[in-house]
Amino acid sequence: MLYAILCYAHEETVFAWSKEEEDAVMARLIEVQTPYAQAGKLGPVGRLMPTTAATTVRKGKEEPLVFDGPFAETKEVLLGFYTLDVETLEEAVAFSKALSAVNPGSSSYEIRPFLVFHPGEIKHGETKT
Amino acid sequence: MTDIAWIELALTAARPQALGALLRYFRDLDTAEEAFQEACLRAIRTWPDKGPPRDPAAWLIFVGRNSGIDVVRKRSKNDPLPEEEAFSDLSDAEGDMADRLDNSHYRDDILRLMFICCHPDLPATQQIALALRIVSGLSVAQIARAFLVGDSAMEQRITRAKARVAKAGVPFEAPGPSERAERLGIVSSMIYLVFNEGYSAGITNPDSAAFCDEAIRLARLLLRIFPAEPEIMGLLALMLLQHSRARTRIDKDGQIVLLEDQDRSRWDSKLINEALALLDKAIRHRKPGPYQVQAAISALHARAPTPKDTDWKEITMLYGLLERIQPSPVVTLNKAVAVSKLEGPEAALDMIAPLADKLDGYFYFHGVKGGLMMQAGRRAEAREAFDRAIALANSPAECAHIRQQIDKLGAVTPPAV
Image (cartoon, rainbow over all chains, first blue to last red; front, side, top):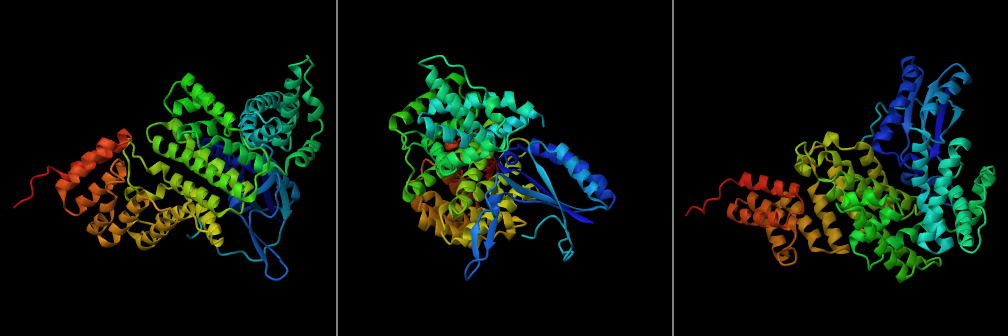
């Protein structure tokens, strides 16, 4: 089963990390991911830019409306996601618990099974600018 | 990260909102600060056991307000402080409560808090110091180190600035749309001042370099509460782009490295990508402003894989636009640099000649002039301009940079007849 692990946290706190703190957290997160990646179970991992960079398109009466900011103003926002191909929900929960253990603060992980509509063509993490 | 480290971050992040709400409630900066301090102390005592609340700012507003009221009341009679456990147990309820009490004021609270720090009577350095002390919660010692003054001198400076602001009176009613826009503009320039202080002084003083991160944090905060303001997107994009080059601006000997000589592979692509995304969003609004245009210029540098790929034509055009919306001799000087890349140094020298009077005391004017003269082969005049630039340099690094230019000129001999 394919799972998307969606990471929610307080944006203000995460963006208050210093470079050193961020590097330390990332190193620990990658340590958790490595065995899953080596077992061929980890798919693309995405870090979302801050909600201030978000644009929302919502169905309007005639033209769809385009406005700035994330879909809803919430205390915890979606900060990033992992994709994981594991046999059972248990394993996805274990992975999320391990991420949670090394991620400081009040982050939470939503585990959502998903179906691949299209495998995609993007090969590298960097965007073409 | 330890519990305490995380709590400190949460307190810093919640500070503007909580302090802003307490300021509105008590209408006095000192009382609001005391109440916030007290709430923080209680958070440090309570959170490690009970776990962090879902909404730290709401918790701090609630606890701060109670303790502030209590302090005010205590001045007449000695009541015991209420136990914070009483409301900590409310867990989620405090969020709803604070929403009901404060969400309608949220934006104006933060804006007001920032706005009182940039009172026009205060000189720029005091605006920066006050904002860092009050909005960001940096300690007096941290700010003093960054400004290279003693703790007591900085303490005095901040106290004086606060007194001046208090005397001027802070408008507490909700601002109308035009007044809000005006406040937003003033606050934006204060944030950019903080950034520039870090950017220029950060070369020699790592304590002030931290101001850049702080300015970016404040701009993110401002954009989060005003998500549809293209100029705030522009301001944040501009600072992110400038900050993305921080690692490459200085070489290991502390010398300035010019944009065209910087190692572009070491520019921070994460910051650049975020800035480009913001700028794209801002442009959709079709309300160009000075920060957006400056960010667009900076983005063209960021997009060029090598210096020779730089789109100087587009940059010249953008400087032309900037000249129209915010004319200044410095903008014209920058435009001349772009023109020199397209049409050569003589064309640029013609452009800057009329600026000589206005910019006579400006380091960069003489530095640029010297550089253009050097390119044009007018070595004696270049030497003269560089000498003038050295006299006006603001830091040893700037001085050393001009010296290098003079070395490149070699010994100036009188022009051959």
